[in-house]
Length: 160
Image (cartoon, rainbow, N blue to C red; front, side, top):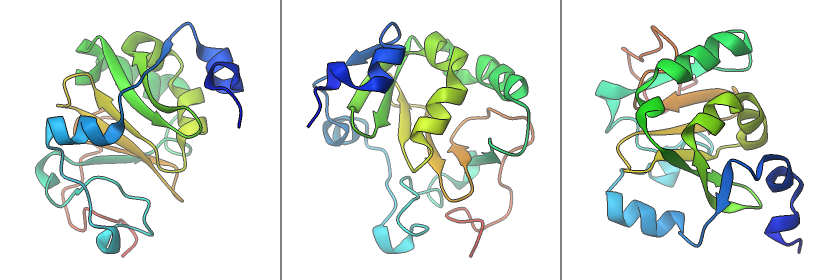
């Protein structure tokens, strides 16, 4: 098993990433965020209980919908931009801390690397998002892309 400090993604982004000892499980217990039940999630790839958060459920396909710069502007104008850092669940690295400005400036690389169902949280646990597959989408409880709020069910999956 490779040392996390030697991991290629960490090496590429270490100026904005801090490896932590925080576990996502402990973070979720502390912040009481509603998770999806495995049977009701879309092929196990939806993490948050979006039916519970249906009044603040936003969804867009980052890979298809807009050019990179348009989505970056959305991140810059989002409520998340007011946070100092985020926690991000990243395969092979665990639960990492990322400076928010660094994340926003490199959102596309994070999206590609985390596109198989990873989650992100503001430092205070109030804002969260996830990368969903197979649609290469971002689903969040705050607006990133204008007019991306889901106003009709189903919230858990757009494919049911």
